[in-house]
Each structure stands twice: as C-alpha cells, then as structure tokens.
Image (tube, helix red, strand yellow):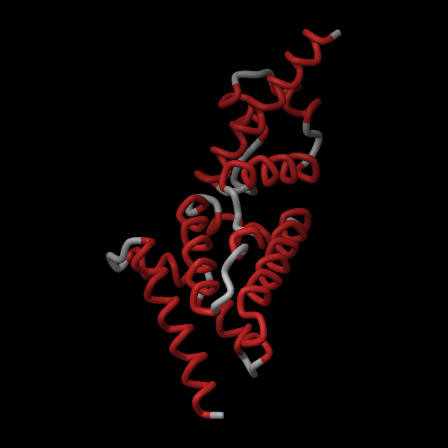
Length: 191
C-alpha cells in the first residue's frame, strides 16, 4: 500500500508541475487537460481522476507555487524597529517575490475574473499583503491614504515597469522605498 501511495503522490506531483508550467505559458484558462496530460506524461483520465475540475487543480497549483516562490510574511519584519528599515525590508522582499512569480502574475490577473476559485485565492493573498503593509507601516499607516499609497507603489505593475525600464529588482526596491519614506516623512513634517 505504501508503494502505491507513493506512486500516486508522484503522479499527482507531475500533474501539478505540468499545470504550473503551462499556466505560466498559457494562463489557467488557456491550459487544457490534454495539455497537462501530455506535459506530465500521463493518461488524460489520470489527470481527471486527480483533478476533476479547476476547483481542485487551481488550489493545488497555487499552494505548490507559494511553497516554491515564498511570498513575504510578517517574519520579514522581525527585529526591525525603525519605519525606514521596515519599509525597506518589506519592499525588497516583495519585489524579490515578484521576480520569482513574474510568469504567473499577469496571467492570473487576467484569468481571475472568469474563474471564481482563482479570484478567491488571489483575494485572500491581497488581503494578506494589505495586512503585511499595515504591519510594516505601523503607526504611520494610520495617516490618511498611507496604506493605499504604499499598496499602489508596491504593486506588481510598478515593479514590472521599473525593471522593464532597466532597473534591477534591488534598484527598483531602493527607489520605491525612498519614495514611500520621503512621502511619509514629508507628511510628518507638514503636521
């Protein structure tokens, strides 16, 4: 029974790996079960047996991809007290994460509105990111529009635009950190 369970798990992993790769290339909705079966080198029925619908496949893929790409969490702020340090660490970690997820993020943004399970997963992730930004800013986040501005300035599209213009991920993170910190400090001085 153990050997059979291990073989079953290995097949499931191959299917998920194939689906993740295809989702990066074609998007979730552009990927068919026959595409996945071919890439995973399994029978079409095997894909359906493991994942009868996108409602089962998408969570498996997004969970596995999160393990691989390591989204930033509250632990990135441990030991950092100064707002400038916290903001810098957050932006560096988030932009590095964007670099690891670049193939999937734009495609998922397109597919999410036609696929409720994906929209639910991405909405949860966005809520987690908002909570992390709130924790990063601490008392500064209570200022009018601070949270919204920090979220907008650290959006995937901003990172992509800056890196496409020639900045490295690290340089883009430094620039956005400086913009956020300068804006927050200027708002403090004005009060």
